Length: 410
Image 1 (cartoon, one colour):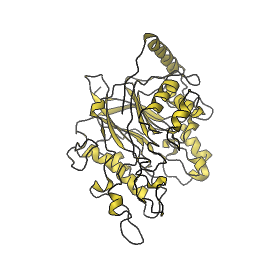
Image 2: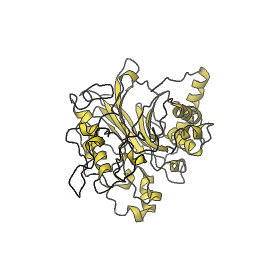
Image 3: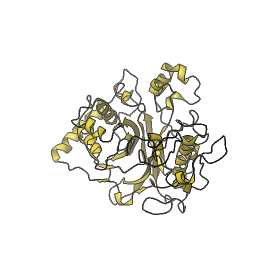
Image 4: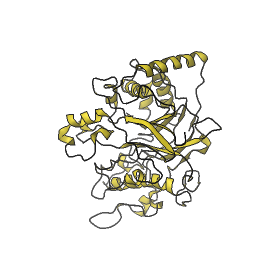
């Protein structure tokens, strides 16, 4: 879908500049987002948990600008002040109404003493969650439960994605891989019934089962203006590697959804990589990119297939020299010591707080730049409970991850 930038009046621009400057000057030093920043682009990813179990319910909840959860989500974004941000778990609707309301009634309005933030360009598109498959994909003997959808969901568009940017988006060049079938990936790790050794899915299942549980987008952003350089924002939200059985169907799908990202930045001439418009091949070898999203895969902890995220973290085109972190993540792990005592990863690098769900905290949200981009700064926005933003982060079980980047040659 396409959403045009909102018109700005001189008064609005003046108000925006005044509030933005005030917000940066007044930011707390302990909240991970730097109070001052060098020239460059601030990029973020944030699983907002702005999903609802009924189609259209998010629109109803957001209308009027008073929804407490959305106000907190907007506050977090206003404290970090990204130039481009991917929102995961933001319900998709074809008219873009929820996105419009969230931008105009929440982000464009100061929350809890923060200055408003104006991200003029936005992109969203259909996802596979909640899309009926017509098959018993969960093999539980019934049809049409959320696990039988092409991607787990109670309605089409649940757990969608939304990209917001202050820089223009080259919408005519956007590529999506929503329709790519899992079986079409060479050497796909399709699940097998461990008791029989036979394929967990039959041929009719595989004829409709797409690889992406949501989608994979390549969204070019014109960082230096309409005639300048572009950065490809590679957005996805693979299925979590849990909620299945001994066949590990979700773990294997998570692995291959992440492999799809790896293949896309590896294989410019790949014939299996066919986007939704029929164009073949992966990303050009000289293209600059940022991979971002809730990838549902921790490097060392959790239940993912071993080595899954290494397909990206150890990829030769990915700049993995900087790892975002926070003191809040370390403190949260200490408060939930009973759950987190066996974790192997550095808790300061965690991006999700699953303590209330009875699960250990994990690092599963990522912003990964290409080798042609230099990281200036970054962090996980996870303030202490007594710091500004400490209450706002409780609106989601994930934390916003951000990087400040520049071109390596700059």
